[in-house]
Image (cartoon, rainbow, N blue to C red; front, top):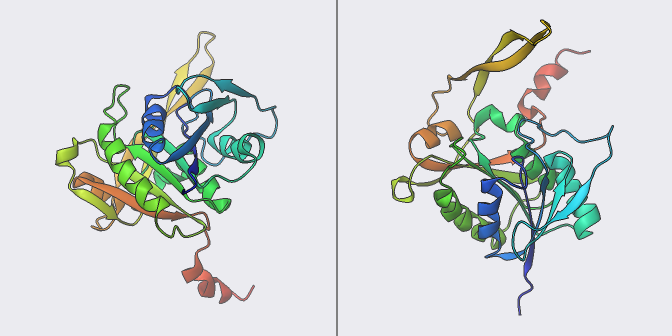
Length: 255
């Protein structure tokens, strides 16, 4: 009899979010699932870890028969605690999400959802981050569940390269409207930041981050292009940020 896979599920929208419940529904089809997720929303935390405060871990009964824990820390904290204090071993697969809102292009650098997956890649664990391009609290996760099942099955039955995780984004469309799945590049697109200056009740200024997303990348093989054209995008993602193709150029500086 084939041994069942051990799957860790986490996210950045909190253990109470609809997206993680949808992902657990899918993951339980493929193995024994354990959930370790933040006790409150942690969007935009990137790869932050908690070093100046104690971390709290509490067992919660939110997923039926699936063992689950809420963590007071970041998504990366959740992965670390899960491996070393909950599972006491590395899982066969880490799934992060399903995030409310896409994590395409440079959003991956800020995303708590993808940072959890990247932490898994750093640990040598097959890891996938799932995001839906819909910020609505009542978002329809059925298309993402449908395509995530296909991707998870392939990941578990294929040679998943070490040190790489997958960044999966699903467009805000019904299942019949989605044209398929495309492996693609991360788009070169950025936030044009602005800050709204406001005053609190004491007359002291504070700032609220806002801005617009600027997509100037016209290539047709990027995640943003694929999402806009009705495809699920998958970007194989590395944690190694070295610009290898530019190393010789800096060697010529002769420092």
